[in-house]
Length: 347
Image (cartoon, rainbow, N blue to C red; front, side, top):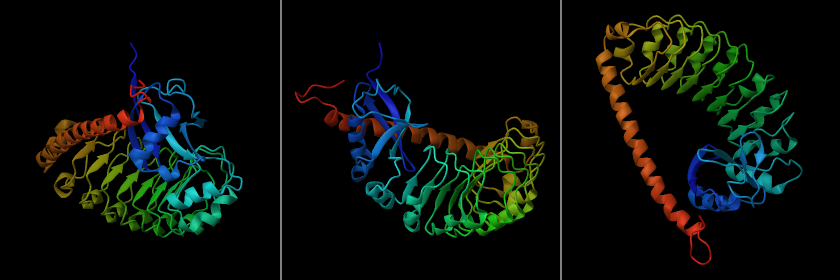
């Protein structure tokens, strides 16, 4: 017998909202739950819609079952992609400080965007057919996050964004990163995964505020020693590259908690890594030539193992707690929203 309730996740801006709902409830009723769970009632206007990734907009009148939304599905709360003079859409962008143009089948950034630029903090133009990101991008003076999916980028414009904290450039065809990347001194997260990079610029060492660096699935054969200046780094993902060793300067990353180096030709690690990186609790060395016998010889290995086990236990305890907390909240909300006028359950 098929379950009457399903668990789904709704993405809204940078927030992921887990929801338990009746499979036979309408899309419109799902929006009603979002009013309670995410406090987005002012944004659920005629311009708002729910969609499945890759542009299928959900019909408000259809049930989740009819919309082929099943257990574990992920859907998105988005604004309209109709870029004619739409005051509601402009108001939405200004209220959220977030412009979502992802998966809009766009060939250029719409003119409607530029007048809003000075107040916007997040710009997402990923998964489009945009051929040029112009230097005019520098008018986003408050931009904190930028998700670009584009092969023709004006680095002059981007590197003028002195407040930029998050830069996504994954899944493109980038062969190099310019030295001017070092001008983004407010950058906290840099994601250039799944490109064609063969190296990182030496100037990456100027990014002293960088906390998260993701360069997995490239063709990088070495990491510059200047990485040791990025002392704010908490997580580094170097998986699936052509690395044969790590620079000793990695030992200077005293805030490092997670290091991913799987699927590389690395045979060993810097001698002082475990001793100097005293917060390191996650190390992924799968599909490398590093053996357990090698790891056991490093000074500080025992302390690392103790931190790793404590981290795992904490994560499991947190997952159990959050799951129980949300189920209790969802039951209360659904009992109010999903009941018929005669007081009987709609499921």
